Amino acid sequence: EVITFYVNATGDGEVTHEFFVYANQTSKMSNSNRTGIWNVTIKDYTIPTIDYEAVTMDNGTYSQSNIEVNVTATDTHLSTIVNYVYNSTGSLTTSASGSTSPHYTNFTSLADDIYYINSTATDTATNSNSTSTRRITLDTTGPQFSYLSLTPTNDTRQPTPYFEINVSMIESDLEELKYEWNGTNYTYYNDSL
Image 1 (cartoon, one colour):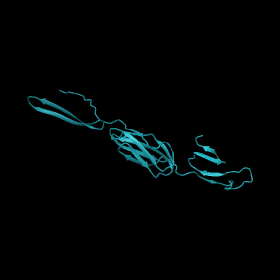
Image 2 (cartoon, rainbow, N blue to C red; image 1 turned 90 degrees about the vertical axis):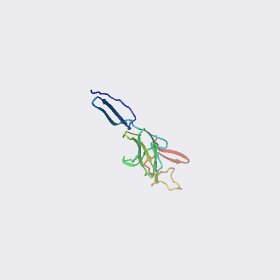
Image 3 (cartoon, rainbow, N blue to C red; image 1 turned 135 degrees about the vertical axis):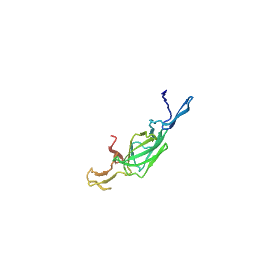
Image 4 (cartoon, rainbow, N blue to C red; image 1 turned 120 degrees about the horizontal axis):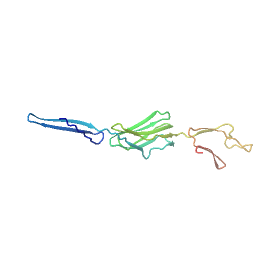
């Protein structure tokens, strides 16, 4: 006689569970047992959660040469967390990985440039999740400017009731340009206007 049965079992993902079958036949002619053992692993389909934490830099411009990234990831079977830094051309500049949460990295000695940061958490079943990407501009070089021709030299008396100022300035990320005349500041340029 053939007996068919089904088992619907649940359990923790990525854990091996033992399934055991026992059958017994007793008759006048023989006594026999049939057994079978199967090891079954339940697939983990749950993706890790990951998010930025305090000290992680927001989108913006910073006058420093380091980028701090701190993330927290949650998963029952967390395997790795990787913090990534890409440069303005999209090339990977550096990364740092760890296996515990939170995962903090201070990327130091970075040149002035535009950088993009994000982080990815992966579990032992290769499910992964990533943070949003943030745009960080590092600019440790102040504006460079010089007075050009037509600008009177310092402490000069002008024979006319006016004078011209000619200034050349180099700055890749100019936010504001002001000048002062007789103790009053005048805004010539403001990138928020």
